[in-house]
Image (cartoon, rainbow, N blue to C red; front, side):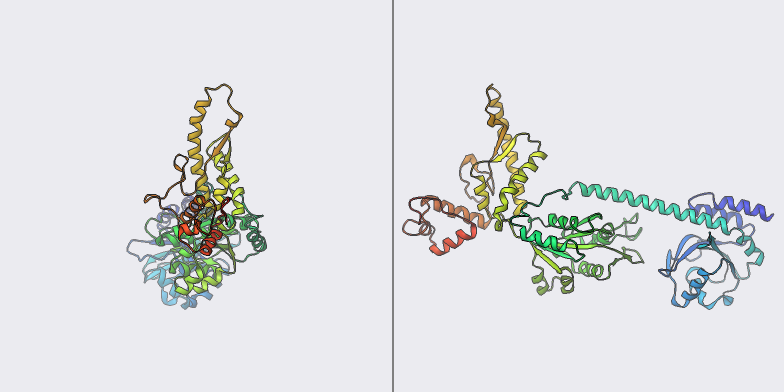
Length: 533
């Protein structure tokens, strides 16, 4: 066949599909009529990572499989780098005994013994993008004519490879975008970034001062506090006040991740890394690139996960499950826990070196019982927010005396418990308001007060029929809450008298100083009365 016809027919097949393997199968079927070719290989070399990557491999079934990627051996590295930087050429290896000693280790890793090889370098616009190798069983299979014929196809092969790589990148970015859109959609359903930090000028004033000090820096922050105190809100505030505010804020509940999925969720995985890994997945650290990652309940991490997290903090890089390369990450870490990490270090359940890495700037968030001055503002905010969610159009206010009752409650569940109480009270008040509305609708001169919904609030549960709730076997209360009720009942019975004959201390069989100490701790004030002492 004329060389020009060969070039035209081969080029039509080389560029016949964006699926490079399919195009190469057609090409191999054509050129093996003119050039010995039992197998075809297209690959590239990454000089930054010293890794060779397989792009297309079409081998007979009885040939051994070559790896998708391989680390170039040290003895071959200098030779491969020099070849990659040199001008494009072709190379014939009809007998491995005549091959460069430095290239033999690579040949043995990728090709069967007793194979003749023809290599053609692929360049495009003076940039090396890959290499093409043909293999034929037996020795002495290739001639200079074969090499020159294949070298005429350098540009079509290079264009096809470049287009295929670009197409793969577009597909990868599209899948990544779809993955990110789904992830962000799920995150937005529970987003808290618009929530206001109530108490920033009162009970949380010292905490917010620390937030403003550390927010502009890159230092890790450890948020400490009981469950329900608002650690996630403060982590959000730290992110929004930092130079990384334009980047993502990624939340991770360390206690909610099964150990078997922890590595994949945090660090991602490659396609085929394990059963069910049908596509490449980026982990939470990669998603947080350029932003902040919030590791909630850090004390729940398993020992194995602690080791992996320590590596990320120390080396600023991750490795996907099933991957062979490290990926640098630029992420600020904010962690939180309700547990005593220092005690866990002493007990040997939390790594001391990880503790030192996380505990650079600890912030202790006080529980709600230590900042009762925040309760009025919190109550107003939660009533407004929950009313809007429940589509309550009337103005909502707490019933008389409810605020004093809330201030005296110990709040073991903190702000989360208060939020649940508000929602529960609104649901109950709304159903009662509907009944009242039916009665008022029969009266043409309805009172203007009907535009206001008065909400009864009883921490620990609703009061039955307006009576003081009683503790039964079915109604088990938190200890401090039960003690508060008991002391209040005694004070009501004694008219506010604490000590002396007939006083609350005598009624409760307590030392007066012990009773006064508990009253101070629980924020209980004796009601005014003639017998108060």
